[in-house]
View (cartoon, rainbow, N blue to C red):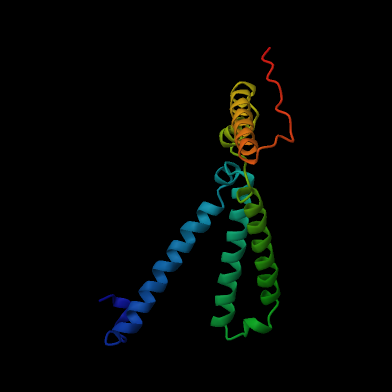
Length: 161
């Protein structure tokens, strides 16, 4: 047991919570030291700087909120509530900007080229297919005319140049 807890040595739950609070306070201090490092901040991209600033503002507001609670002041009636609302709007706006950049539809050039290439008219293949279709239609028309016994439409002459 820690000598600081001589009178409270029987209340293990309270001792555990106090130690947990002390550890959290030390981690917050380490994070704030990192945040104060100008070289680290300058190495960030603009998008990361926005995230960093929002995170720091949110963290400091949260710490101040907890301080007000410890001092038995209602944070809901304090000006910090308006600051948190403003910060939340800024976070939503930053997320919208990020989504606008990342969720934008992109063109897959290879797929588009394949679509265009396969949809274009190929004169060599189309001419062969067209001639075969025309010959088949002519043959069906002649068969129909032979069955009817009359030939109202004269057969076109096939000129192959």
